[in-house]
Image (cartoon, rainbow, N blue to C red; front, side):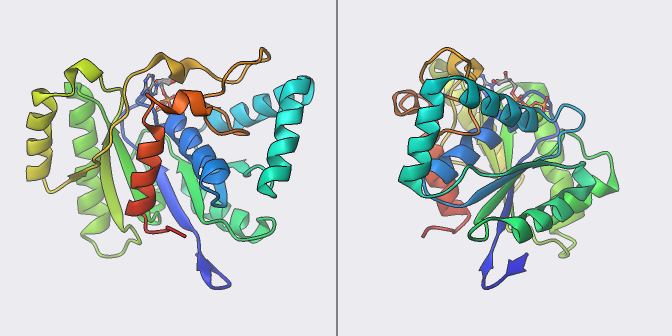
Length: 259
Ligand SMILES: Nc1ncnc2c1ncn2[C@@H]1O[C@H](COP(=O)(O)OP(=O)(O)OP(=O)(O)O)[C@@H](O)[C@H]1O
Ligand SMILES: [Mg+2]
């Protein structure tokens, strides 16, 4: 995906299993890379018919317009960063790449460094497989639950067989990422799982995300530290303990975009 000399990386948190944190992670990382790390980001929400990120952006905007505290915060963020909020577009999964190209062409000021694509939890159409084959990096969420692991490993296996090994894809990396980890449990059990995963030739990220209640916090009209939001990054007070900073650093290394 070229425009001028810079290239936009297409990245997805994708898994075949539903409810494992794909959309939450997409927003958290998009906001972290755009507002904290200073990259130019875009998001394409392909999770038809929920379009949960697209709808979250609409809600976030309404709140910012209505609540003076957030309006002021948004204005000072704009002044401080010297750039606007990242765009969020929606598209059916088979059309995700066209939507990304359009976003790159229309991106204001620069071309985006990363476009995060939130895909539905299914590989049931050729269109979705084609989209996956056109991504640069896939981070596949796993949790220590037999069913989740099994379906994610199948997903990763399918990607390997149908995408990577055909040599026709642009995919440069597929990494598994533990989410919803019960901190008391991050122990031998995970080591055993990871050994099994390693034998399948799959890589697991060093950092994991703990199971914490703050994932339920979206921005509301009452003023409170922000966690998951498309207009602001996670509040500094909530970063500690969420490990999102460590995860973002590791992703930054893995996708080789360090400025
Ligand atoms: N680390 C975590 N700790 C606690 N809750 C989490 C964590 N990660 C995600 N969640 C919560 O799990 C729920 C499902 O997350 P999310 O909607 O992001 O999943 P999804 O994979 O996008 O699901 P779907 O397949 O329906 O699109 C949400 O309520 C989210 O806040
Ligand atoms: Mg989702």
